[in-house]
Length: 108
Length: 115
Image (cartoon, rainbow over all chains, first blue to last red; front, side, top):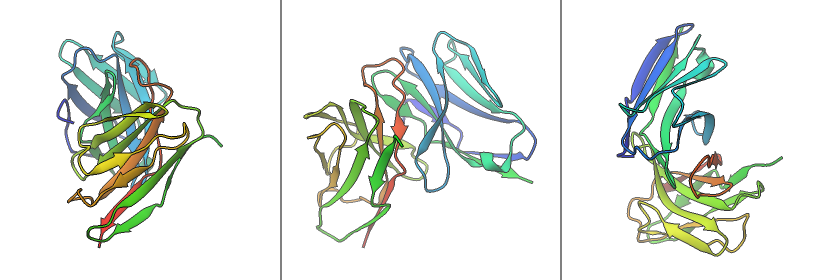
């Protein structure tokens, strides 16, 4: 989606932290989401953050939101091989607008 | 088990042929969506339906048609007017589509290939 931008690729060593960044344009977005897609599968909701929050933590996942800069990030702690996937950032007004997805590759 | 199912997993289309992709949900969701996914482009919205017997065009509706005769079902027809139909098609549903926390749940997808 042209309103949501993400870098396309990220390579990370197993056990390190991954940080995936996203910028969006719609300041009226109420919620922002992170979805995960494994090869040949549908999208799985990982987490979401309400626009009046600046941080949300859920086990190994930390979402940071800078509303002033319209910047969202997803940090995955202790990255595992099972975290290899495409990660989509999405913003929600009356419909979801998705970024192009960041392909995360975890190397041993 | 509650969820969204899509069939078939793979579908082949010949030139000039219409094909229909199935999407069924038993989550009692009012809203349903169809997306197209191409490599490096993320997901683009084709059609969505907020309620039975009603649907709206998304960003790339040309060459596609839908119906919503039942709450559980939202089939997508790829018509011969769609000149570049090869893609991965994803169906999703949510409780409503009126904004707020409208978490969308996705089916496993159908890959359409042109012969």
